[in-house]
Length: 459
Image (cartoon, rainbow, N blue to C red; front, side, top):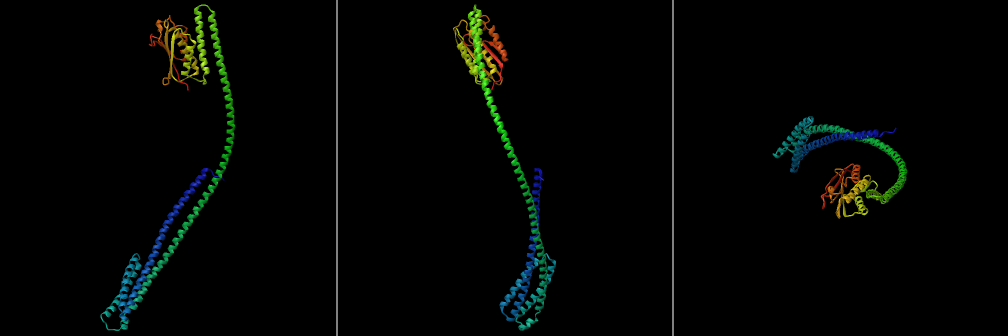
């Protein structure tokens, strides 16, 4: 049965938790058992110390007896020194064993009896030694026989043997407890190792299963990657073919647009030629003037169309270059009777191609009208073309102004005829409005035409 990822994660979590719990429990148990083992070791050591001190106690009393008898028999002061040293060791051993058994009332009671018996022995020894030191005339054998030390010493040894036997019994019990504690520690360690080993085996099995599933997933991913790469390669090939086809189509469209612009330009030139021929054929100056004006407007549209055809980007037109070229064409195509200076001040931004023709024709019409009517009776004049945009207000401002005679002093209503209607129509096509007023430039009041229309700069 294949486990899900959630099941494997749950098992791994439980096994790790159990492992940590077992380790904690084993550590806690080992700590408490170790404490018990330490206490047992201390008790064993304590018991051995009591037995050792009891033997030292017994040995001191026996040494005092031996030293006393040797002194009585030989009167050698060296044996008296051994006797006194033994008594000193006896007192030290008595105090030590009394301190060691203070928590055992039964042994304390035995020590009370032993101390009484030891005192009886030492008192008897001291009396014999004093008698000798006082010059008692009894012979040595008599002094030894008169002493009851042998009986007292035998009882003392029996009492010490009972005390030591009791301690040995306690020692045996404590060694059994110590061995039991050591076995318990070993069992805890072995049990913990067994449980941890089982958990490790479970983890190993899960790891192997996870590795197997990972291998399966890796194989599936590789197969999917191979299939995806094939799809990507096929799709890339299709896109490349589509790109080549689109580029070919773009080239064809551009070729058609160039041909269209060329045909439109030729057609406009042809219309202008027809108007020029017609102007030469008709009689009357008014008709000739009207036809020539129409020819000029057609040429203006043709010039604008030609500038658009020369632009590589068919969506937008650079405003500065476009307006400057329009004005340059006007300077070339118009035969001014006066010396007229035309300047430009154009911002550098893009305008949509859909508005370019309208703006170009509007500039041509406004400059042409100014050149025709603003400088009547004068030898020179000045015309300035300003074109810029305000991104924050989303509007453009086209201004054509001159230093001519203005509206009041010119020929009869020169700006109220066809030219004015054409300008108003073009402004309406842009969705704007036109403001007329004096320019205040140069010699005369001049005329200032300001066209304001909504505009969002093209990217």
